[in-house]
Image (tube, rainbow, N blue to C red; front, side, top):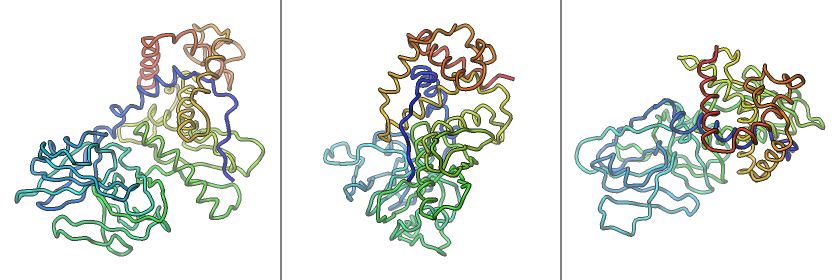
Length: 397
């Protein structure tokens, strides 16, 4: 059985350092697919399209589309429609908030089509399906066949339909239909159970050291998909091309990251969110203009800070998953910081750490613990450290 075990040592760079840097580095403002947009042609009459921007009041929709008369969304949990109209005098409408990835029925008045352009957030490429009918937007690859797009949901769907705004008719999104999807489209899907649908090309490739059952492979992939979904939803960021290599199960629960590869033991995926954080750090620190990976060198900054960022991301994930409490993580960091005697001036870079702390886990744990208490009593200092880290990421040789 897969397990996300309880962590014994959580106080690396401390909650304050990690949270400040992570929030600055991966906020939706700085990582929203580089300002990418999508455009959907809406025909007069009924249309189905996805909301790809950040959460917004439904009034935003009517401001963006001048001839929009009525909008419907689908509440998959209650299996019922939500609706809103342009007239402000109508107070009984039930659709109030637009969320990333939401599918929408839109009725356009007039006689001319409208080119609807909006921002594309990566988190719109993650959909939560419920048992029954779902109306979900597509935020994945442009031009993908519906057959390939739905392949990750094999065995889960009993029906899949798309809507053609030009013909004003449904079509079945089935094998051999020849239908393709563009970002910003939406689909009607009937599922037999709840599931997360990761539409982005960020699925981690899993390599097992030994032969395992198909069911165990699927369970492992689903657990790792959850980690990618977390980063997409909470930090609006996904890294492509990551491989996970799993050793045969042992009594330990260790992990590591190097060269676009995460190393773990097959029965314990506890390190996954932490190690994926390092993949994110490396990718952002070495990203070339064409979007490819570059060279790391010293671009990810001192180890105590990079480890702290990874630890806070992991702690938030585990808190949301109900594995550990974020309050417990705070307390571990606070206690460790109070008892740490390190000289702060020596902790600016890992290569300047005192003897015995320049390599390995001590450099990560002890340095971060000291800074958590002594450098960060106030928000201004947090911001200075965070911005200093980002500067080193972007400009270090």
